[in-house]
Amino acid sequence: MKILYALVWSIVSCTAFAQTQTTMNKDQSYSTEIIRYKISAEQQADFEAAYTKAGEFLKASPYCLSYEILHGVEEPQHYIIRIHWTSVDDHLQKFRSSAEFKSFFALVRPFYTNIEEMKHYTNTGIVWTKN
Image (cartoon, rainbow, N blue to C red):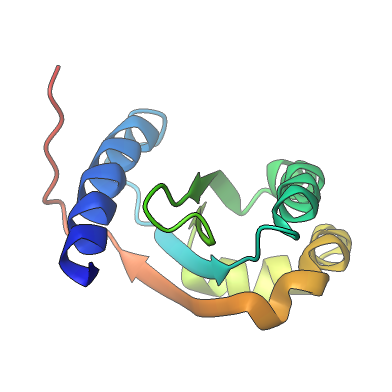
């Protein structure tokens, strides 16, 4: 099952990244934050509603370039949040000290203990998209 999950993640990740990359300057250095959640079926509607509202504060931030929320098919309790930041420092220092972060975090805080991973990644430049 782990291999299937990794394969699906790779396919979804490449497709979504390629779509996101077309809206960003390809020469720009940025960081992608990946947050993996495990959310029970009973919490999923509240989780999606919270991130829908919290997304408005990401959109308002000059440090957030884009975000995406993915929901597991084979494992529906899993969600992956991908947020593209102008840089790791902009995310950790500037965004987290902003008013947007306070409002964002107030909405997603109830799900903080459901996080399985929260890390930053950089673009390797290895990407393919079928045109």
